[in-house]
Every structure is written in structure tokens, then in C-alpha cells.
Length: 232
Image: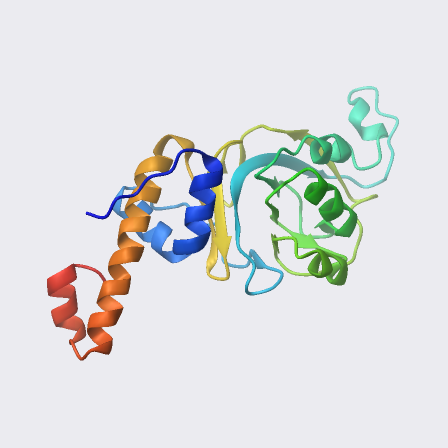
């Protein structure tokens, strides 16, 4: 077995960027019994070569029907965007802004949010909905994953009502501190309690796949390669 080691998040994330991709991590999670960790397939990168990896900073959004409401029950309703600015400013280095809870009527991420996130050292954004300011985000090369581009503003339509709490995207539970890893093939959530076993297994498999590919390129049949390496 090839040696696999890292000392901290920086080391793990750098190793993952060099050697891993979403599919191989998903394969290992399947083998370990984590069968429902991929976010829906319509959540994808703004540009195909974008990769996101970091720890989730979870954000809960809710639909509203006016920009400000003088509610006696919830003072957040009087704030434009709710707690969005507080959530954005709370991002830490290597964290991913992960937002869920809204209907797909408006954008949940944009250029100025990307600018602030970059300044704070954040690793990317993954939203269960749309983003906007596409050209500005692309110019900053900020990893952003969403349904796609749609300019309608969240101002009078949605508010962040809490952050750093458990959220779900189509039944996939995400806790702050879980690792989010995504590329053009999808975004998955790696539970914190199993991350070491998952990434060690994924790196071993990725390295094994390179041996299989070399063997097939040299003429070995697919069935023979699978019998020899147990990988396909």
C-alpha cells in the first residue's frame, strides 16, 4: 500500500487537488456505506475546470415576499437580506459558503460576495439555487457551484435566517465542518467523522486507477485488469 499522509487541512486539500476527483471519492464513500452524499446533479461549476474543496460553512435561506417587514415576531425580517452579510463576513480560510432553503426564484450568490469571500480566504461557494454576475465571478476565478446563472435579485425575495447550523439539500445533510468537494462531475459532502478513512481510500484508489490505465494502454483487457487490480 502506498503511503498516504497529511498533517492539516492545507495538506489534505492540496493533496486532493493534485490527485483526486469527485467520482473516486464517491466510489470510496459507497464502499464505506455512505451511499447518499452527492448533491443533486444540477448543482455544477460555473466553469468546467473549477474545483472546490473546503469545510462547509452552512447558510439557511428562506423565501420572503417583501424586502423589509415590520414583524414583531422576528427582527431579521426588517433587515434587507436578513443575516446574509453576517454570514458572509463570518467565512474563515478554506471554508465553503453552502446555502440551502430557498426556492429557485432568485440568485443566492454574486460578484461582490465573491470579492468578500476571496478577501477572507474562503475556498468557494455552493448554493442550492442560482448565482448572478457571472462575468465578474469568472474574472475573479472564484469556485462557484449552482444551478446556473439567473440575475433576479434575492433582495425582496429571500433572506438568510441563520448560519453555521445543520442544513439539507434534497435530503443530503450538511453540517458546518464537513468537507465539501466538487468538480465538473458533481459536488459531494464528506462527513467529518469519516473523512480520514474516505480520503485515504480515495487516494489509494486514484493511484491504483493510474496503474490500471497504464495496463490497458499496454494491451491488457478490461476483464483481466479488473481481475488483477480489482479496480475499474
